[in-house]
Length: 262
Image (cartoon, rainbow, N blue to C red; front, side, top):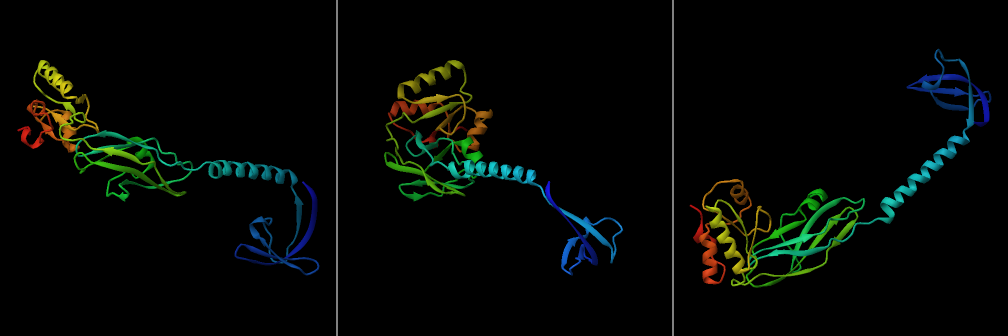
């Protein structure tokens, strides 16, 4: 600490945590009374030393410079990236739109919106970046059979609005069964399930062991099991094994309502 100066003051008033100090040449200054020595009263004379701490100044300037550089790096150089989407599983009446993990840099996600053919849809979308990067997909339903659509995502952030690329999706015709993807429940014996899987192969469909977003039908004979409960919660059509046989026999998708599990 250098350039220390000393001055004497007479306490002229103590009020509300402030002291009125009077210099020898009758200049008045306000000074926090908490910084005065104990026992100071009206009329006391105090000496105050004032100095400049250059070392602390240099340290604070360096800390401030580091903070500025960090702010520049976090907020000035990194920006949110436009979402990247692609078409997922597609059937006759619905499609799954998937996206890569969202990159928001230091911005906050305000909302996500799905657009179909240029129109914003009333589609439930994840409300947080954590939820969006966990789900990374949304199923859009109510589509027309054998029809082409264009989809994209709007990402609203605290740093602005970003639109994804546009993906074209064409729903399947009724005789195109490649979009059928089933999950099996209780279908009887293993031999029966294996036979159904051979049927799936012949019609060009597929199956999976778990109930996921891309499942079109849950095949079972009985309303039991965790797979059945998961399909029920997800509003996935639950059908008897005869439904698969009917699809193969007729060469096209059959209404699930005719094959409901009793």
